[in-house]
Length: 100
Image (cartoon, rainbow, N blue to C red):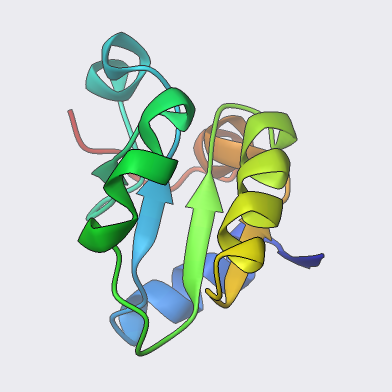
């Protein structure tokens, strides 16, 4: 499984990289990586059509555990998916902004 740091994610976002946040909607509303779309892990397989296949997709959750499992799901479905180590918590700890 491919994994990236929040520093690498920030650089990828500057290049327009897509980010899927697999947390529950209430968690997402509390704050998320700017530009992330919310597809809760329980809905991911039903919503694969909402994710572009033309470039790697970064997957984030709160800590990196749920997103790690969802990277496996995406990879099994033909996506190039990258887990964000430490998740949104690491993003916040790094001092980067969040959207609400």
